[in-house]
Image 1 (cartoon, rainbow, N blue to C red):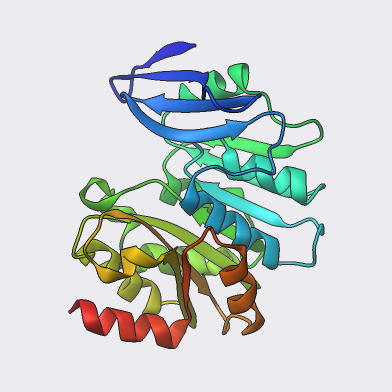
Image 2 (image 1 turned 180 degrees about the horizontal axis):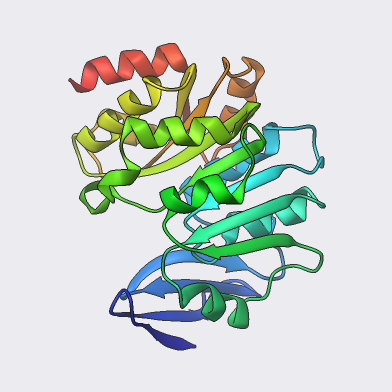
Length: 257
């Protein structure tokens, strides 16, 4: 399936992944953007999304419903994952490209029983209206990569607005794509650290050399993140995995300067 996205001025395409039964890839402008396994939504293919899914696994007791907000909808991969692993969860996805959600959902319906509301709009502008203050167990920010980042979604003031909707024991998970040197990542980590009480990093080990491009995940909480999460997230992979707690991230940022 293919559709021209007027706002973005590019085509979106959904095609079988060629490897798994029920697996599909969403591409936008010729670049792969999301992967969905309709037969098994609990399986997450892309590494950085799998790391965020692992965070979703620990934010509450196994199987318990959560309140989740996804800033950047894509093919709703993580919303499908939460719906499958935490039945009864109330979720909202915010997507700027107005034609994309309908195109995705026509081709790739949500799992039966999934409670996912899709809102078309800017992530920052929509945030106060999609979730009550202090009620989100999980907020996922996945709308940018490096120099393509919308500036208003990279500022400490935006992260302060996100912090206001995160529950006391909830988290914000941010996908940060960056080039070698990781200067953009470092700036985003510092911005989060200026707002949240605790910020961790999840990444493939080689990315922490600073010599390769890739996606790193920042996890931020209004309170210190539970120490037990480190072992769980490290074991969950994908491997080779690294989990930097608050102190580890501070030391890593020092090496990047």
